[in-house]
Length: 242
Length: 94
Image 1 (cartoon, each protein chain N blue to C red):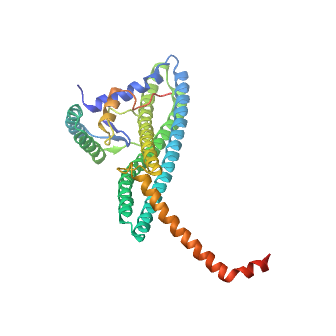
Image 2: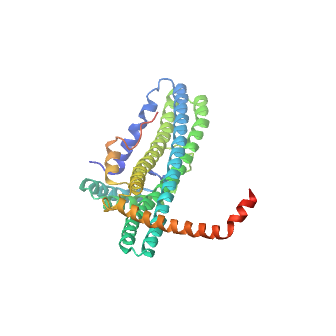
Image 3: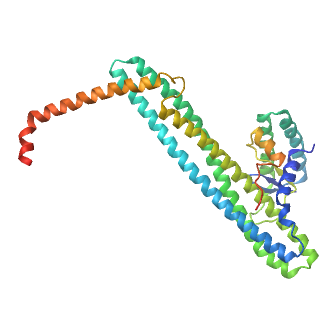
């Protein structure tokens, strides 16, 4: 078996041999090939836009997960203040589980960022090649005999096809990556909202409920205090206003 | 000879560099067959570095095809297999 370089060349070349199939009239082939190049360039631009959108959505999801961390932290504090160390521990354990998930998501976001940068550079190269092809094709048509033109077209199309396959691969990988990450992020999201993250499948609702009860108790106390103070000073004023 | 580093660009390298690349390439092929992902990535990374360090980068609007293509150096094992099977990883052109 040949090495990886020749296998990669073979795969890349087989992908664009189709572009050269219509090679009866060189002029026609040139125009047809150029049309296909423009079409692909549009696909690439759309692909990049999709990746950027997906990445923004992931960043938003990450922000929401960060907020869950903050919430768990304050829940732990509340529980501790209410003398419920057991609940505080549960909240902190849950927080630590979430933190690990977030870290791995964060690493993947960085990888995606790198892929996106490569993709944009690749698109720029492809644009430059397509533009070079456009200007060369008229020269080829005007200056060469059919046989010579055929050879030059073959070369130019091969060079472009190679770049197309390379850019195509970059797009495909970035898309795969965003899909994996989206699946992962929404799985974490679901676990967080349903309160079933990590090992707390059974206790979780209990934790939420108990913390909720503590919170609402202190909220009730707070409101009572506020009402008392309002009643103490405010009854007369309210009537004056009406 | 012109070598493409996938995900990067094309470089013109001399024969001496090309020879060194071939050695690494053979090892990379073995790593892939043995399922050694880290080894495969390391070898591909070294191949790309050799090309970048010793080659002259082609202008973006140069239309010459490459004589050899170095696969991306951050491939996972299953991605590499997909790539070399010619299925899936590189999408079909329109």
